[in-house]
Image 1 (cartoon, rainbow, N blue to C red):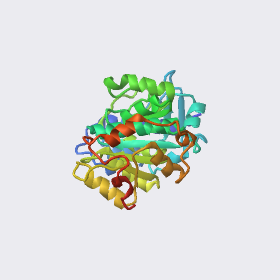
Image 2: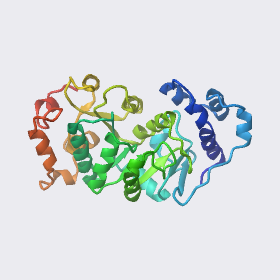
Image 3: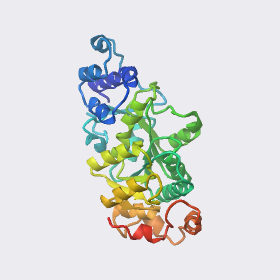
Image 4: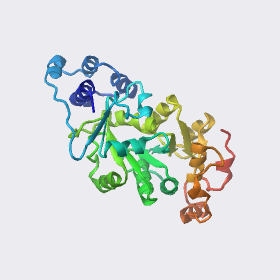
Length: 329
């Protein structure tokens, strides 16, 4: 049962969407601060015209057949991980049943987020795909947005591995931001769930709503894996939030001369874990030597890893090379 004040807050965020979309330039830290303000303060900060009129005319969101579940901050089933955020969503909407959502988000169910810049090299694409396939086989749930970068590839890998995914959307959870990713979105819904702080029917995916969704991804994950974060991408925000929440950070090492090389090196120097396989990530999740029954099985072998290790044209270190084992944490 979702309480009226939380539904009202959800409606306020949706009502502020057009004003927030007009903010330019939009600073991420400003937006995250605004999302932590009371209703009136949020509308004023967003410069919504006649905020008192907006508050009087608010219509509370209603669940639908495609979005049957909503958990508010006063619900015992609301994810503890999200409560740690200073600007936690008032309501988390989901495309699955409440029981299924609690199962997916249970603390005992390990979750990994894969984030990074778009335009991945073939090396990073294959590492991401192979890693998430292996994690799925070991019972790990992949968390992330649905895009054409590493997060989309991570969902593809998890589904190929017969696992589960949680898609964090910047619109109503049953809707896809990208027409090209409709099929992936639907397959995620079948094997896992999509969640969002935005109510059913909300479809105004703007830069601000993508930024807002970025705080949910690292909050739900136990480990955040960074893959080729060249330039300033949302991965920087995800990393910052994950660090503030005490989540483990892991990175896929690449060449220092790559666009993301300097940032990856800094993360490693700050204590991030170097990873290139599902086994490495499982060690971060559970500790060295505790890699899960599937990956201990000698029958578990992915030919992609051998191909990557032997292919000198891939942009990045060899899988078994010293670049992965000789970096000081």
